[in-house]
Length: 363
Ligand code: SF4
Image (cartoon, rainbow, N blue to C red; front, side):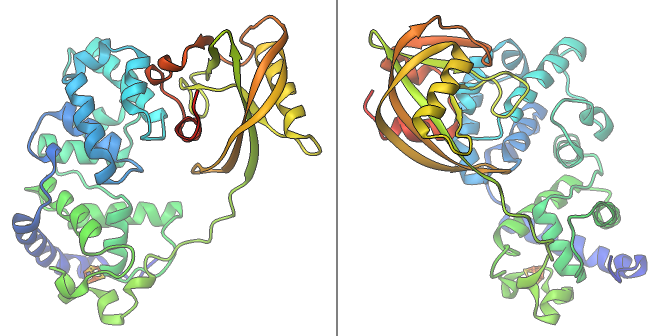
């Protein structure tokens, strides 16, 4: 995938290690998970940081640890409590995996986190990157990490001009990361790379003039840093129109809990679903509510329409006030249904699109 050869890497290695570690000593970001070696706290930060920016994670991290300061408290927490603490952070499978991993650590490992990459990767939700980060930062192991930031820095530094999102390219990058890693201070080196990618070697307009490793950077020399890494063009995401009902009965509203395994599993939502081709929104809503909860409904006024982008699709969610005309309420797709008062909405964790609706409506 590139012309990078091991002898070149060997020449780079000592320069890179020295320059990056010196720079990190002066410019490391002061982040709460860097003031500890507690693997629980470092693991939690790494899971939260998957797909999410540092600035977004910070308040969630603090709130989560205040409520659940140890892996034992997390293992005992209810799913509703954990989801509520996670609400708004997205990618809810991460929260479910946190609970499953905490159960393994407490139930099978006497409350102690594994201290090797292999042991950590046996925990639910911990992949090679996260295991490398925890092993190097919490346990001082010489384990490399390759995430979006690291890929960008290495692609530019080494002048890799082929797409990185292919399996062979990924393997090669892991080998490069392993070769460049220092035996000592691997945790600092990994965090320095992440900081460099986040603050200097940014996706757009990298600050090459301030870069501690700029002297040997191939992309800087070639003047094409902004165009690296090369990406394969992605297919356009599918878009769906979704309808949902704010179904009221005697001052309470119907909510359902999504099944654990699927998208947004375990979260609560207003019942509804996709508008099929040729259907009106009202007809789609009546059909979905009949299929999902067994109720015939009258569709009333339009409450709100919101747009939301998930990683694999985008949606327009249209919500209508509804009243029950007939039927018995039974969960056919949800694991649980509840009729709740407006004041109780804040107790449950809802997907982002539902919360956008609640923010624009008076219940
Ligand atoms: S010199 Fe520029 S492109 Fe090269 S690693 Fe530094 S910031 Fe990135």
